[in-house]
Length: 265
Image (cartoon, one colour):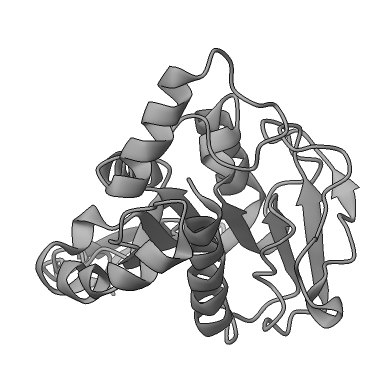
């Protein structure tokens, strides 16, 4: 992917994150990877962290960004397959192209489901393998002998529908799905400007073929509920019925005769 397309990708994802995460409330939010993208800058949670994953270089750079927009650097480093938080501890997790670069995306998603609280949210972005951008990325990897370990672009693309199935199996409900980037990714900005009209056409007629997709999902935890039972038929208890009781007087004088009485209660 050329630098013009990468810049457009960064701008589109930054705009979407600012719009979607501004009103997500909670206490703890985490972004895993890609420090150039500041997805949590518009969020108002008191605790927001930027984590560096094992697939990224140790010293991420922020060349080309204004001084006010430069990230301060990661707050911690972790393995995307084993997170250091206890279960049900985070309110929001953002994965900008993290699943595509992780050695085990299934394990990374399982960790997300573990650390998120019930009703917690996750935002995931990824390159669409069924698009121009995805095809060019895959073709570039096939032509190269080995992937660049310091590259920020994904090495294994995940299809949009497959990711939805993974989220559904882990108990997530996908609430927002968006696509962007229908223009081919040449290395010239002039050609990007000439083909810019393809974005409007693609968004209208074939949105699922966009170069990048975005998903926002909520962790659902099933809870118990009362089941209406059948009404019981009222049966009169026999304990309340009148029954005869036999009583024998135990106090008898020497001259008195035995006297039996039968009383009914």
